[in-house]
Length: 486
Image 1 (cartoon, rainbow, N blue to C red):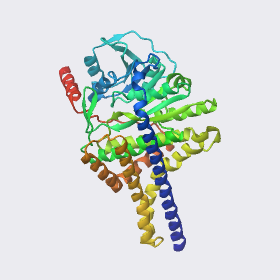
Image 2 (cartoon, rainbow, N blue to C red; image 1 turned 120 degrees about the vertical axis):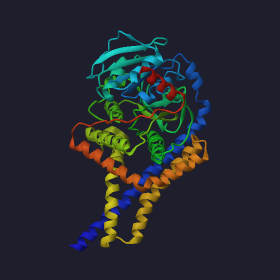
Image 3 (cartoon, rainbow, N blue to C red; image 1 turned 135 degrees about the vertical axis):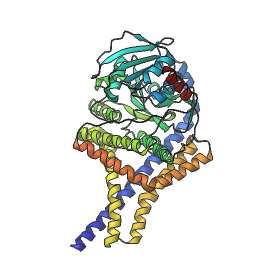
């Protein structure tokens, strides 16, 4: 019996060893593809025609939809940035989803909001009650703020979609600050290829530690916390490199709800956001692929690497754990809901490549990670594997993973150079090393709990993220308004 157990452990450890080789190799392939994409992007940049697009009367107008729930510390800075974007014609629609803090009051005082009579259409379904609609007194065509009872993020987005007046809708998180040209950049593919582009995602970076003045990120720095620095490395590897690689392959299935642009008519056709799925942003993209593939449409879903949407990341383990459980639960729910697409040639590279990849290398990865943490020491203890194999295992699982992270940092640095101080780059390298000691394992625990929660059913909870707001003049002005209210 002991020999059977040893043999089982040996072959299991070997299988996990091969899995980590395949996992990290797939990441490296996506990063190399992203680097090729960045090279082409930088060569085209001087001839991109952004100024012509800004001046052209044919540039499609955009409705920027901002769902907000208890976003008081950062809401003024975020909306300031969005109402000062460099774009010929757009509106900002903020949907206050039953906030219990000063979110609406801060907006009302800063932008001099006045209530207006407005009927909310029901082109896409929503369950909550709209209490009032407000516009900025000095700029009613640009800023609209909707107050409604709490119904969740997807419900708030659906209300915003119903009130959106323009053919493109951009979904942006309320804790985000956009670069001035962000909307021009993410909308450009729609101008270049208007008949085929259905959606375009933008890059998300972490704003913690950066200085924000007048709704603009004016000084980019690494955060002071190692927990946040590790998240910076994660965002570069997954959000910038991973999604750029998938976009080049034509298999992009995730556009972050923090910054994504969609054709409004297509979003309405497929019924808006799914309020029953906690990963409503990615689910919308998968459902869009499904709809357009069934219609045999010639379409594109793409990703642009700059400019940037800057978002506030969790600064505590408690809040980070809730976020990552929610993210992985969303992946599990989406793959379960759309399981008929997985491996189905009817859906092309989405069904045959992208979704199977998400099953084997995104959904299952934390389970394999935790299995390795338990089974490798057990295999050493019972003599199923030797020390030489254990070292090779560690080098493949963690050393190869570190190489992937460092490659991401290197490509980002030579392509965009967002962190101008060498000390910040050095901190990023150190964060990539520290990520392997405790953080990865804890992350795997959170992700497993999220996936199991999805499979067990029950209502998902978003939880509360304690916002710290952005540094600089906007944070000070927000505090003054809040103090004046008392």
